[in-house]
Amino acid sequence: MANPLAGIEIRFKRLPHGQDLPLPTYATAHAAGLDVVAAESLILEPGARFAVATGFAIAIPVGYEVQVRPRSGLALKHGITCLNSPGTIDADYRGEVKIILANLGAEPFSIGRGERIAQLVPAPVQYARFTEVEELDDTARGQGGFGSTGR
Image (cartoon, rainbow, N blue to C red; front, side):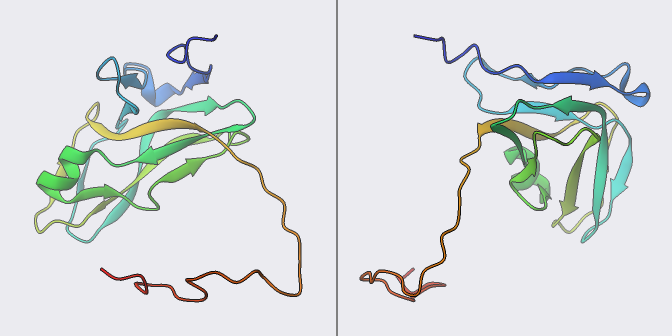
């Protein structure tokens, strides 16, 4: 049986403006997400959003994606989150990884170069195919949505 902690190989290309930054890394032995740092410094005003450079590009194996997720401490303490969360980096994307951050807090937030800003979570992709039909099967829920099952 394969060691699940061995993981998949993701090829990493450091860009010129990321030369002195650490690779994405797990903060603890059993963390699900790899911490990623900013390759630039900026101030994110309340209500603002910005695609923060990371200084690297990656090549993800076919059949996988890398999800971009917020860091819980930044979200709770400062209202800093990732938009389009979880974001998806597709296996065929080769551009710079950028993290779309938004400031939902009441104060400007300073982001320093080298500061941890998000998590990257590799995940398998389940491919699907659509089959057009005339009718769908009935369920107890039916067409109820958007809170129809209660609070």
